Amino acid sequence: MDNKDIAAALEEMTTLMELNGENAFRIRSYVNAARQIELLQEPALDLSARGELESVRGIGAKMAQNIAILIETGQLPGVGDLRSALPEGLLEMIEVPGLGAKRVRSIYEQLGIADVDALAKACEAGEVEKLRGFGKKTAESILRGVSYLQQHRGRFLSRTARDEAEALRAYLSDQFGVVRLAVAGSVRRCMETSKDVDIVASAKDGGAIAEAFVAYSGVVEVTGRGETKVSVVLGSGMRADLRIVPDAAYPCALHHFTGSKEHNTAMRQRAKDRGMKLNEYGLFKGDENAVCADEEALFAALGLHYIPPELREGRDEIERAEQALLPELVAQSDLKGTLHVHTTYSDGRHSVEDMARAAKALGYTYIGICDHSKAAAYANGLNEDRVRLQWDEIDQVNDSIEGIRVLKGIEVDILSDGRLDFDDEFLSEFDLVVASVHSKFSMTEKEATDRLIRAVQNPHVDILGHPSGRLLLSREGYPLNMKAVIDAAAEARTAIEINANPARLELDWRFLSYASEKGVQIPINTDAHSMEGLKDMCFGLGIARKGGLTADGVLNALSVEDFLAALGG
Image (cartoon, rainbow, N blue to C red; front, side, top):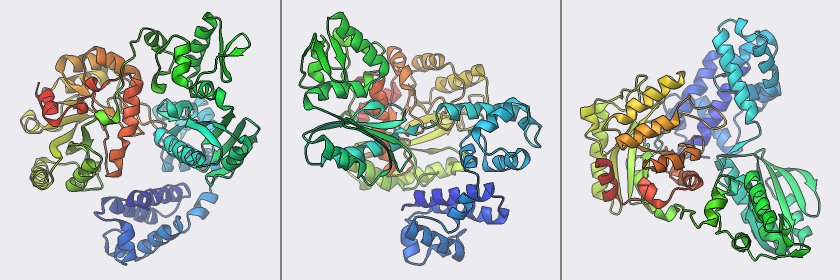
């Protein structure tokens, strides 16, 4: 259990206590403890083992004891009682964007509402806006949040989906009798979110692999079991399906269950136009199955070059595959640097040196340190003096570590009118400037668009960070004319990032082809706040590939010298 896990458990405790109407002083003690754990320079686990955790400011003996129990058992004392005391629906109401625990408690106490669907009806009936401290605008905002939550109910971020899928794949691949096996579905296509995990397998003994699947330690419920399909629910809440097919049908089954629905429809039509029939069982000419050795052979049988899974979204991939116009998609091996990285100077969990060494271990030759600027006070944002202290440390790290260069960057806040948090003279001294919005999201489309356009037009801004501000499954982005922002960035020669954090994953892949056509460079940035976060590059890479990007269109595929020259140009 690392510091992030412990802080998350403390924050969950805070939410449960607020929902239960617990003492405000006790609630604040957990809030303070979570913050202090996040700021620790070393693992709380080690401090607890040495009996030193209670000496940390904001922790104390009782809280240190509770954290020790959390580390030992995986649960804070009392959390189960707090959770069981609440109507189940209240915890889902907390997930509504903009609706915190205090407001949920107020709604529950005054209206007796304890689930999201009832909350939506109360908003529509005008009941919520009459509550003290709410009003019509708040009720409308809550209703929009409920609609967003209902639309995405049952979906999971790509990190959860990929972790579950990879663990299942590794487990099942080791089972006796497996011939071929792969992850399919939206996970294979690198979609931003997924409802379930799809596994396709061919095996000498289908019954044996089915038995192994239901015996997997992560399974909490078996919801269906047949000869060719087994369905389960995993501990995370995700559903998982195992499809078992004869090996001769494996390529067509893998293609079919990878999807998307739109891609499959177009492929079936293409087969039909050629007097064939394509489904999950094979490619048929009359009653004869034109057995394909693999997916490449399947595409070739229909006169197509191989279409990577990320591109199978029913857009123009089939036409381009027919004309041999599919791009050679960017790969992890193409990436030379990792950018937009945070450290303990702002809200990161590791030092400049730690992040540099971790990046080097992952094969990168440069890293762009971009801590928050002073407007982000909630994230311990840096003023000019603290920036210069960081620069001194970066110089020391560059002198002490060979094989990687640490760039002096900043994630400067874009203020409400499009101005930046630092003046131009100071910004000119950085190697790298990422400009991002972190506040005042309630704007009209024109206001939000004008705000970003002014920012990208600043000659000292190198990269626009997470442009829409969306948080997947949690918050919609602010309204934007994204093409107008891309046009402005192209004219100003400002790059726009793909933020690889699984909760962000933007610039949205649907805009990447337009950005490429306009000549906008796209770096894949981790926005890492820890050494572990540097590994999130894989999620951003998937989005880049979905958008059809090649190495030539990815800014951090350049060497550090060429990267800096590109920024200077």
